[in-house]
Length: 179
Image (cartoon, rainbow, N blue to C red):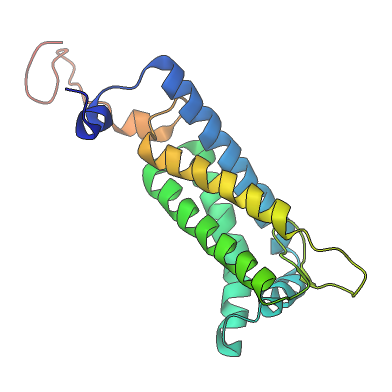
C-alpha cells in the first residue's frame, strides 16, 4: 500500500518533521522580512505595484498597502506554526503570482525592480534587471511552500498542540478509552 493517499495519511518520520520545520521557519522568516521592509514605505510599494503595469489604477493602492501586511501575517503564522497547511497554500499562491508578474514584466521588456525586498519601481536605462535570479528565488520558494503544504506537520508548531486529544483528569481520552 504505497499510494499517494496512504503517504499523505501516514505519520511523518523525525527527518520529515525536521525538514518541515526548517521549511516553515525559513518561509516564515522570508515573509516576515519582506513585509517588514515594505510596511514603512507605502510610496515605494505604490511605485513597485504600479511599475508592473498589470493592475488597473483603481487596484494599485489597495494592493500596494495590503501586501506588506499579508506578508507579515503569513510570516507570523508560519513561525508560530498556526494553520500551517493553509498558510503554505496561500504562500504558494502568492509566489506563483509573483513569478507570473515578474515573467510578464520581463516578457514585455519592462525594466523594473520587483520590490520583493525593497521599494521597487522603474529602473534607469543603465541599471540591470535581476529577473532571472528573482524567478529562480521565487520558484524555489514556491517549491518549499508546496512541500510544506503537502507535509505541514513539523516540530515547534502551535498546530501540533491543537491536534492533541483532550484528556480528562482520569487519564482517558475524549472517547473514554484508557491511555
